[in-house]
Structures are given as structure tokens and as C-alpha cells.
Image (tube, rainbow, N blue to C red; front, side, top):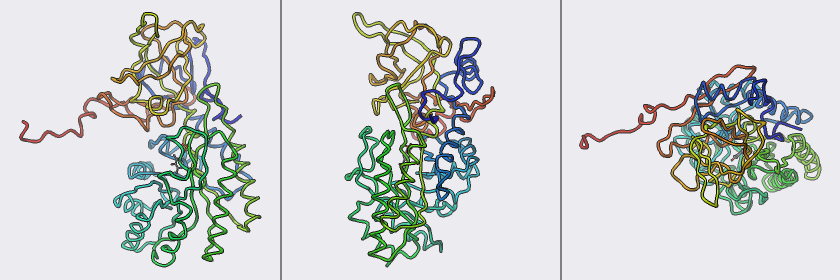
Length: 440
Ligand SMILES: *Cc1c(COP(=O)(O)O)cnc(C)c1O
């Protein structure tokens, strides 16, 4: 079993007080010390999965692992994943800036995105971002112009749409044919002609695809490699251009509930490397360098969110709602993708499950429901609810809806807890507000 196949962080246990504990820290004490809502990240789970990735690919040394920073990015996370040997897949000026400020080796970064701005592309070149995955014709032209003006030649990959569908939520599918991302295979030749004939400041090194997220099917990766290597051999035949880099994107799923059965990192690695071996022989494409970009599977299981129980409502002959002090602003996934989570009560994890309730958020939307119809013990005001697997796409998608302050995040390890993101203050909240003189 690899860490993405468990619901809980690897260090999660019930301590002698009968409380949930992660990274040697009592969650009830953390809630007390830092207040709630609170994101808690287990350093050991992140390092465990990072090592599992490295271990799974140890027989294929020609691989680069890039952490897809959009899943959760702070300077501390950059430090942890850099120290585990990961590079970074970044998708905005903000992510580039964070990596830079965290001291990341910028040449290990790859810049992705379907509508990068001129400012962001300039920033990427100025700060030494190693590679850019170019998504479309406009970007080819812009990037060439920018690289020319700086007298640089930049390594690029072409993001392609491989025409592979995965069975995940439609909002997180990206590899199907009418996706907004990347060049259709029928447009690749035109892009290559432009690069070879006109765009002298672009150095095409390979192809990039990313099929979707929260993927449980291993065969998809096998097929993806086949499509890309076939394309690489076709490009060699037609243009005499040898491409050696294939970026397979991210997407490995994690276990949110008992009914989720994600594959292990090892199974994915075996599918990828066996497909590279098979298709390299078939298409005579040697020396392939593989990039992968896992995001969710690196940080998803490591993070939990703590909430405090507040009001409740029993609808006569209907649902029982239990409201907590957070919701869609700190975790939009339930309302965005109907995502389902597993929960326990941190101060009484072993109490008998006596009722079925709906955990409601505090935001002014009927859709702000954290978990529907979940079996819980008797609950009272002040109980601390732990929602598992909120480490990816929770904080990173959070908002200030209702002008509620964004929660803090703490990193736990060996009984120590450290803030990695401060809780916002009301001052922070209004720090960008301006009032035109004439309104005073
Ligand atoms: C989102 C994304 C990833 C990461 O996906 P996960 O499902 O979080 O692993 C990797 N590559 C690209 C291009 C992405 O858009």
C-alpha cells in the first residue's frame, strides 16, 4: 500500500487521551492553540509519498518528478519537496514567485497553462524557469518574441490533447478531444513547422499531456505513453526532429472514502515504464526522458481540516444539520464537484455512530454542505471535527467569500507543530481595498 491508498495521514492515531493525533500532535490541542478552521499537514505523509514515487521509478533513472504546485503551494511545501528532489510544475506568476522566494532551483520548474500572460512569460524567462509547456499558437509566437528580445533560447514542450478520456468528474478531465487544453494532434505539424522555420528562440524538446485528475485507471497511463511515443516517431519521420522528453502530467487519485480504490504509485510506475519500454521498441524511440507531475497524490492525504461544531437544526421529519465554522470558502470541492469526504470527531473518534447528519458550512449558500448524510456520534457545540484528505485543492482553491478570513495551516511532525500559513487578519482582509477620494 502506498500513502495515497489510505484515507488518513500515515501518522494518524488515537492517543492516550482518546483524541485523534497526527504527527504526534493532539488535534484537539491544535484546534485550541491555533483556533479553527485549521488546515493540518503531516510532513511525514508528504515525505513518505515523495519517497514512494522515487522508489517506484528507481529502475527508470531517466525520470524527473515535478510537483504540481497548484494542489497546495506555500514556501514551506516548496522546501519539503525540493529537499525530496522534486522540481515544480507551476501555472501562474504567483506560483513562479512563491517558488523563487522559497529558494527553489528555478531550472527545475516547468511552466504550464492555457493562457499565460506576456508578463508571466517574461517573469518565467527573467527568473530562469527551466522549461515551458506551450499550449497554443498565440503562446508560441509570444514566447518566441520574448525570448528573442532577451537573447535567450528556451526549452519548450508542446502540450497536446491525446484524445484519452478518463472516468473522473467532467470538470477535472483534460485529455479528451474537445478539451480547452493543448494542441489537437492535427495541429501539431503546423506548430512544429513554425518552430523549425520561424521561431528560432524556441527549442522543442518534447511533448506534454495531462489526462485528468483523481484517476483510478492505470491503463490510461499505458495508453497515454503509446499515443505520445507514436507521435514522436511520426514527427521524426516527417521532420527529422528527434524528441526525447515526454511529460505525462499528473492525475493519480487518492482515497477520500472507503469506496475509493486508487492504484498504488508502484502500479502507475509499472504501467508507465513498461509502456515506455514496449512503445520505444515498437517505434524505435530510444533514450526517453519521462516527466511526471503529481499534485493531489503528493499532498492530498497529508492534510486534514479541523472545524468546531456550532449550531444545529433538526428539520421536523427531515434532515439534521450540524453546522461547522468553515465550509465552501476553505473547501469548495463538495459544492464544485460533489466531492465526498470522510470525517471523525477529534475529541471522541471512537464514540458510537448514533445518528445520520448533514455537516453544513457557515457560508450563505444552500450548496455549502461539507458532507451529506454522514454517520456521526452524538455531537455538541465545541466538538472538533476532522475532515480527512483536504490537503490538495482545499487551501489552494479557498476564497474570502462572505469576507471570512482564510484559515491558518500548520505543519506537524514528531510532536511539533509550526505555522506555515498565518490565519488572515481583518487588516489583511481590507489591505487591498481603496476608497476614491470623492467618496470621503
Ligand atoms: C492539475 C495538473 C496536474 C496535477 O494533477 P493532480 O491530479 O493533482 O495530480 C499535473 N499536470 C497538469 C498539466 C495539470 O494541469
